[in-house]
Structures are given as C-alpha cells and as structure tokens.
Length: 432
Image 1: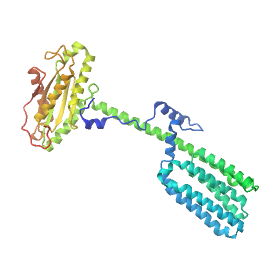
Image 2 (image 1 turned 90 degrees about the vertical axis):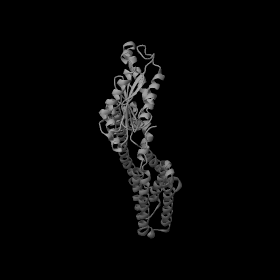
Image 3 (image 1 turned 180 degrees about the vertical axis):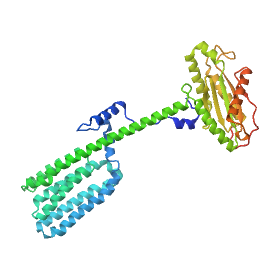
C-alpha cells in the first residue's frame, strides 16, 4: 500500500534485521554464556564473524607491531653481535650470521605483504609458516653454537618468540598449537637428521618445551575470554536491535491507525499544529479536506462490522494513494471520517486532490446495497483553505472543513464542497 506521507514513512518504517540473531542461535548463545563451559566454543554460524572480530583492527595492529618486532629483532642481533659474536669462533660467527640472515629474510618476506590490505586475507597461513620457520631456527641454534653467551642469547630469543607467536600474533589457539607441534618436529629432524647432533634435551625443554605448554595455556585462556566477549557483544547488538524494533513499532502504533494504515488523529493534530505555525511565518495557505464515507452505518448494518473494517481499510489505501507530496498527510480522523492536510496548497490544487480521492474510491466499486446515492461505496468531501498569517486558529480551519463536509451531505452526498475562503496569498510553490 502506498503511504500518504513519505517523510513520515521514512521516519517510522521498521529497521533492517541486520545484527539480529535467529531464535535458535540466540538461545544457543545465551545458553553458552549462562553455563560458561570450560571448552567454550563459538557456534558454527558465527565462526566467520568471530575471526573478523579478532582481526577487526588488524591493519592498525600490524602498523604498530611491525616496527616494534623489527626493533626487537635488530636490538637482539645488535647487542649479541657487539657483546658476544665478535668474540666467538669463526664457525660460530658463520652460524650466527647465517641464522640472522635467515630470520631477517623470513620476517621481511612474511610481514611486508601483510601491510598491504588485500593481502591480509592470507594472514593466518603466512604468519603460521613464518613462525614455524623462525621458532625452528631459534630452537636449533643453541645445539649448534659452541659459545655459551650466544647459546644463552638464542635460548632467550626462542623463549621470547614463543610468547610473541602464541600470545601476540593474532593466531587462533589451534593454529598456535599446530605451529608449536610442527616446530618441534622440524627441530627434531634438523638436529638428528640434517646436522646429526645430539641435542641437550633438558636445555631444550627449558627454553622450548615448557614455554610452549605455558604459552598455549595462557593463549587458550586469552582466546576463551575473547570468545566470551564476542558472544556478549553479539548478544548486546541483538538486544539493541530488538529494542530499536520495539521502539519503532511502538512509535508506529502511536502515530498510525492500525485499520487503514494512515496516520491517526494524534499524528494529524501534531502535524496540523506544526504546519499552522510554519505557514503562518511563511505567509502561505493551508488546506484541509474532511472526508466521510456515505451511509457507512447502513453499510455496517447490511454487511456486518468485519466487512465494514475491510471497507475502511480499502478506502484508507485509496486516499493514501492520492496524497502524493512528502509534506501532505492523510489520516483517519475517527470512525468513517478521514482528513487530508495539504500545506502550501491553493483552492484549485486542493479541489484536484479531493476529486482525485472521490474518483479513486469510486474506482474500487465496493458494493453498497444500503447507499441512497450509488450502488457502490462513495465519499463526501469538505474543503477549507486558510492562510494562518491572516489570523484565526487551526481549529477554525477544521471547523470550516467540517462545515463544508456538512454542506456536501446536505447537497446530496458523493461530492466535494468548498467553505468560504481567504483571499489567496502570493507564494512561490503552491500546487497547481
């Protein structure tokens, strides 16, 4: 149905359901938050949203963390080189610089593309591979170096890198665990097969094995809290949208007539007062059409109240379809009476609207066996036009339109009558 006032419709139309959760999913989320299970999982339909939630500020995070990561790497290499590497044997120096070159290359090749926005879709696999290679190199080097100071430096760097990979790289706990497992396997293969050395398993446990377990546990707690926060945020968004829908529906019910779909009398009175004051300042005319369904009591008596309601609904739709300008307003005034407010409209323009409304209802051809003027439902209209700047009140305008409606009924109904008018005031945008 075409609504009579597009400006009002835009204000009161219901919002989209974006952000709202389907009822089964809503129940599942609430149950998860209420029971708070140790292994809190995100429902399958929300996992993609959860990944976006975790990476919602990934660009900013990368721009801030990349310089910090490079500074950490350069400071570690620089300090170790100045304090230890230059005093190491030639073999240790070769291993040291080869390891530094490998780590620097992996960091550059892995992180540089991530600074480009369209490459961030593959952030997880790239960072996972990069982390696996770097952890493997850092864990292998202490078993190959002879200089105790360099061994201690590499062990410390390996432990620190584990913390960064598991807790600060934005990888999921499952991917972090896979990185650690792959690193452990690669470490074993590199030491026993490639370099054919027997590692110090106890030392490897201290700087790699135990930190892996601790970091994974803390990472699991961290991600679990992120899941809780995500589910709570989705629930808050859903509740906010639900409240918004309820408020809009209450607002619509407060300003619309449920039967006809037009504005109700409360809305009409409010708009009438506003338009009266506006047009008084602008010295422009205001027109009102009072409309009544002819012999509607006879219609109800003959057909019943349910068909009578259907008739009023159809008439309301017809009236609304004839009120075309955004500033115009059609309303159900009460019972079988309707009213149309036409701001900035002269007599001829208002008469045109009234005649169009009468013709639209005639075109419906709703049978009316009890009518004394036609075989179908018809309307009588009263028109009054006033310029608020000439004095009087909006109540006077309504009274004049009501008097014109009475004249139309006295003249035989199914017609439009016009009450005595003010002299038209000059204005720029009157209806023609």
